[in-house]
Image (cartoon, rainbow, N blue to C red):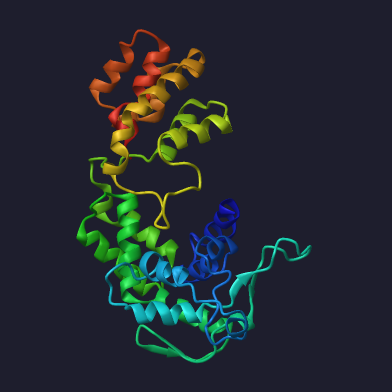
Length: 317
């Protein structure tokens, strides 16, 4: 379901409003399934009373901790429980239904009746709109602005981004009502985003795709997926709800495995390529004199290409 989730909930909103992305994400069947909300029942709901089922807090907890406010930002266990009650009834239609199988649906008989208080605000029982109202407020919370700004800067600029950059992005997020296109423009315009030093180590998927783009090699899907898995980033299968790590310390130990993959890849595609020319194509002015000399003096085209793929300038962005 991850491919459909990325295509349907993420990509349509990457340059839109964060609040819209948030609603799309939390109501997508993939998220409801992954975080166990399908059978979460309010203890006082019709289904809960009749079937003696319990509340599941996973979705509510991860929305607060990972998707909006961030950890240690003032919400309590009571907030998690009340929010979980709000989200009861958020489920999906079974795949056996021919016309609408797999679609989001709100089932009132699963929903906990009554008013709920989340982060100090009371929300009347308006069915599915109760959950949408909580999400809308979470999307506009100052802690969410700070959390998203930090993650944005960390991904694109540095593992420990400049506080001044995070401040700029958080202000832009708030001022634009979570307009992600404006946030991207603010990131590009910020002086802090353009330090000469390339500090971000490419994750395995980025590095593999960079190699394919540089060489124009034919995509062999099985090899790409195997390579990602070998390097610790299997496609769409992060080890935990917080996704794959986004820092150098997690991926640096896998560089020796990248050497093996680079050598194997180069041995298959290098004969039709000019690695020296690829230094200009792929790195241009970023290439150091040491990298240029190393590639130029290699004993074979395959060795030269492997050395280029493992050059510090190519490993980082």
